[in-house]
Amino acid sequence: MGRTARITSIGVLQTTATALQRFRGEASGSLDDLDIELRRILDWIHHDRKEFWDRELRRSSEMVSQAKIQLQQARISRQIAGHEPACVDEKRALERAKRRLEVAEQKVQAVRVFAHAIDRAIEEYQRSRAQFVTWLETDVLQAVAALDRMSASLESYVSLETPVSPHAATPSGGLPATEDSPLASDKSVPDEKKS
Image (cartoon, rainbow, N blue to C red):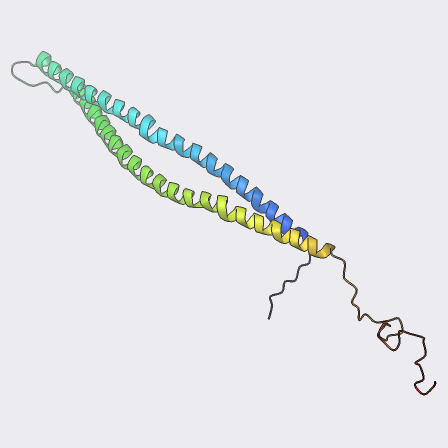
């Protein structure tokens, strides 16, 4: 048994092909936009944040060194009769500098970890992206071409005139007269017995 289709509108095929083409264009544009955003993210994590926290680490380390020197100088200058002075402000400054250094070290480590995680995620995305682009460039284009061919075939089929059958009914409902048919001629049949 042959396959049949119930076509109610040939124009739907062309509308679908146009929609697929539009989808392909929009998807390609979205991928381009996403690529730009990913480059910005990579630049931010690998350069901006890395350089910022590396500078903060150096600065914090210098501040710890300076705070230690200031505490040592305060102890020496304020020492009275062998008793060590409290140097409360200098000790607080040193603790603040150490906390800042600790935060900077954590951030440097976090940037390293997240940069690695982002690189892995982007590698996975790039593989999926490549498959999607291949699908857009092959399968979608093949589908559009198939829809165009179907639409053209159906248009061609619809434009054909229905051929008149040689056995088409006559106005009286009988068979049409042909030369070979006894109905075709008004000539009388010759009488064989006449001479």
